[in-house]
Amino acid sequence: MERLKQRILADGKIGEGDVLKVDSFLNHQIDVAFLCEIGKEFYKRFQGIHVDKILTIEASGIGVAAITAQYFEVPVVFAKKTKTNNIYSDVYTSQVYSYTHQRSYDIVVSKEFLHPGENVLIIDDFLAKGSALRALMKLIDSAGAHTVGAGIVIEKTYQGAGIDLRNEGLKVESLARIAKLSVKDGIEFL
Image (cartoon, rainbow, N blue to C red; front, side, top):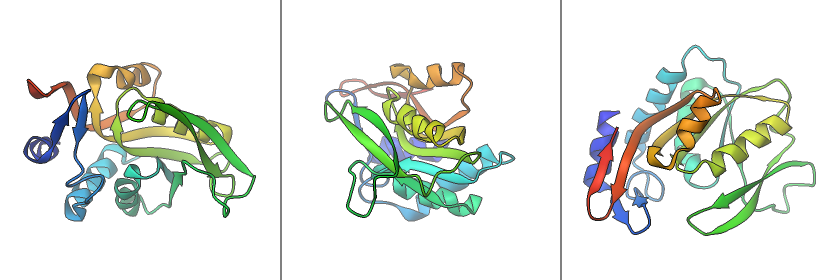
């Protein structure tokens, strides 16, 4: 998606350790009109695939997942990073390793919201090493549901997870695929 690439170049900030900050339009302050374009693009790329639910992980994926869901006319379920008092013991649990925070944490989804046989599309803001995406797939599998694909706003292809997942047969649609990223050299897209 060319407009997304241009937006990343104009407003993205590169930090040490391969960090790309797009918080001015995607995952802190949200440009809703721009996210509508992203949602429409995901709908176009997954059109023809039956989707019952969209699954994401809190917090950065929620905005883009919610806007995408309106085009599919399905609900969004998001995996919570902490179990709260209003989520009871009947949950699906998976573990994610955060390279950003250098720690593992559990994510949970109430069994009330994922059901056997459902077709679930994962939508998230980033794909790097794949820990979050694989954890979401595990939740879907635990529910007896089916992962029908993953829509990713920005993929760091040089970290390999997208290639591995595609080779395993998962339909992964990334709107911007980054081949190289560094403070010194900037961003190179595929």
